[in-house]
Image 1: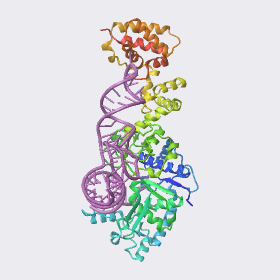
Image 2: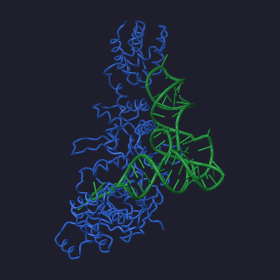
Image 3: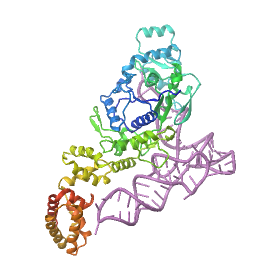
Image 4: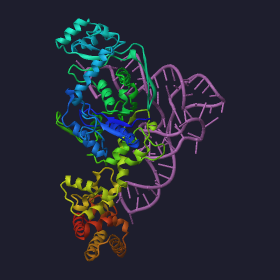
Length: 511
RNA sequence: GGCCGGUUCGUCUAUCGGUUAGGACAGCCCCCUUUCACGGGGCAAAGACGGGUUCGAUUCCCGUACCGGCUACCA
């Protein structure tokens, strides 16, 4: 019988959550929900030196923004609490000890300085990074080289020590990765990783195995950067006697820099001018705020969508998916093996598609907040709704609404008269003066009627309407953009329209 | 250096031995639009290289090259 699907996202709360992290969460979540399983968030805060205040709360805010709700987490509780490794500290040591007793791990008393010395001493051109492995452990200070009395004495004297796994010599460790198929390693190539640190905290290697076992994780997804340490984890499952419960592994491809190469990192964002964090991250140490996708004007639906398409597709040409569709169609075997370079232009396209497809009323609150942040108060929802409907097809990012909507609420601060001045003449001046008086008498104020009136007046003066449209647009909008000019006219109302027409008319000079 | 993973248009990708190698983003052109977009149409653009296996390889195998990851008492 298959056990229940239980997956976990195990971030380290050291800063903002970037693209790759969110995608890992997403794939975990999609898989869990599709399989009717549980999605667990476990905080991997075993490195106390890297603790960053606020990072954990940030992670949950990000998940919430994306519409991802954990079934179990330090915030949501659950049967396997606590979900913070720092709070689980007492349970790791016993397993480390168990491994020492079974001969699969050992005490190592080497100080950081001694380790450093070893690395420089054994460093050669052929071996630029000497490892604490089956070979070198024989020249280090550990319970394998020291005699039992000495070890006992050091332990009794509270000498700092770590516990390292004792990697076997020349054994083949193979496993089937859900994405990559069979992967195998020779244990002689793997070093004796530290399992328990001198401060009593486990390293990731021990903690991930102990907790995945304790939390009954069935499938473990993580970034490809973890592949090289997979044999350590697999051996640990075996040594701890839990092999039958080991989760299925899936190492996700990495998200790469758009230019050059390498893993996408937070720095690439500022360098290339796009966000890498999901949401704004405030770095207290550097005292700087790094805007995320949310602040750049991305809809969470679009963000989730574009992330899912980075390395996965459903085999058809469909590219726009809702979360529910993703849950329904997601499949591990359609995850691409190679890393993907992040393309911000394509990311924006997803957002544009989502803005187009999202009904105006669903956009209302977001646009309203946008204006509120700009110090503009929107009182009339019906009016705003109408405007959103008029301009949303030309917005790529939510923030574009500001530029696209501004002229609806207030007179433009500047008018691009340069676009019409060269062709301005007495005839046009006469026309606009005349049409203004016609408009003054016009009622009701409806786009179609205004257009008819406008064109009739043009015909009366034997002018081509086309020559007059741009001037009218400049008068109302200030520039060469925006929806249909008579729609704008109707929306801003008679008073504003006439005011702007008169204003620009006074700005234009007859040549 | 060693180990592991990867390799289809500039980018994201489809193809599960037989296709004019398809789609999308970006680029260019045209149409629509008396603005800017949206939309529609079109152009250009790819199997890293060398060996096998096979009637037939982008697809399977090997090698090479290149790219990436790891090589911490970080995750």
